[in-house]
Length: 139
Ligand code: AMP
Image (cartoon, rainbow, N blue to C red; front, side):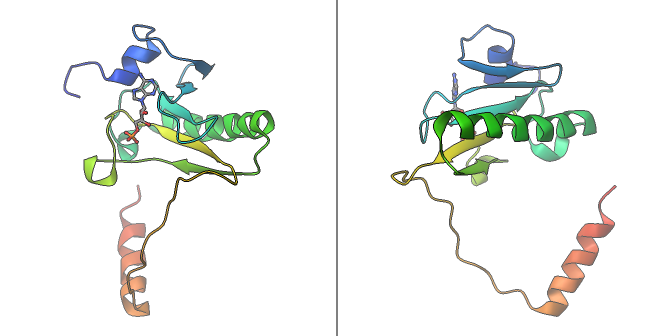
């Protein structure tokens, strides 16, 4: 974002209007302007990080708390039992707004949104090595 305010920072600061759902010191939540289904909501940290791994521990933990609370209210209001929480990082992963955000998307019987993939092969030796390396990198 290099000095320029992101679209979501402008929404958080009230410069661009939004249908606000929730706000606290760390988190802002509002309806997605192009909903994949009725109730599609975005949950955004006020910290202007582009990707999830760049967030401070405080923002990351507050996001987790807010996601659970907001999801519960969306379920109650929409009456769905199923929903997807999606979070894209990087343009190749489908991110279009480079300010961390989680999508909460209610799944109705008629919903068309999909989240599927073809699995890749991973042998147990490679899996063991991969798990070891990733676990070593966690600080
Ligand atoms: P992503 O593709 O994961 O980066 O998602 C960006 C999301 O932001 C999309 O679902 C857009 O519909 C949504 N979006 C973009 N501009 C606005 C806006 N002004 N208000 C609400 N949602 C927006």
